[in-house]
View (cartoon, rainbow, N blue to C red):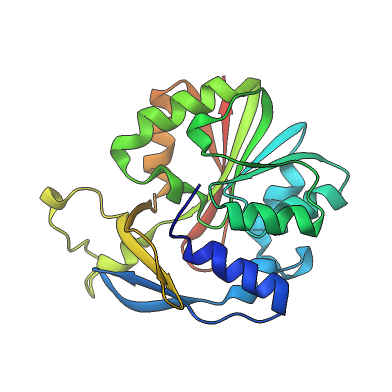
Length: 235
């Protein structure tokens, strides 16, 4: 589905060759960064505690959104759980199929249909929402896909620490919008992707929007670096 797919190309290279080049990440708000491609292929025992907890809690008919290399889908399969993995990258989908993920679809979350007990969004999974303004669309789609009593398991990070001064006061311009809205662009070798919006959301804000849309949200676990796992239930 993507014509310029740096992450998919990196995932494909690593799967075929056991090594990949630099997956570079650019943002107007931060210095250039890099995603270690090998970490996208991590095993269950190499995953952060938050991800392990989410996989343990996932139940019923599970939809793994933005599945990437398929590491979470494979771990769920190993647990004997029913999982469908989706990603917008055809290259990533091809790798997942070769790895043995049984049910894989190259599709956008917002185009999906079906009835699921768990929607899984991991590796700062709130990012695919993009911006706060997309919350209505996100919860409308989640409501359509989830069975009654179904759950969203999502991790994110509260990045307010980036904008706090030495006294802990948030030093931002409120006219610039929510502080967790980021713009990124990736590059792998000569493949440079389009810019995209990515949302980091603090739990209180996530809980507010969940309740506004008829869901309840609970904080399941907090990580070591301002990250957390939330469980959002359709009521």
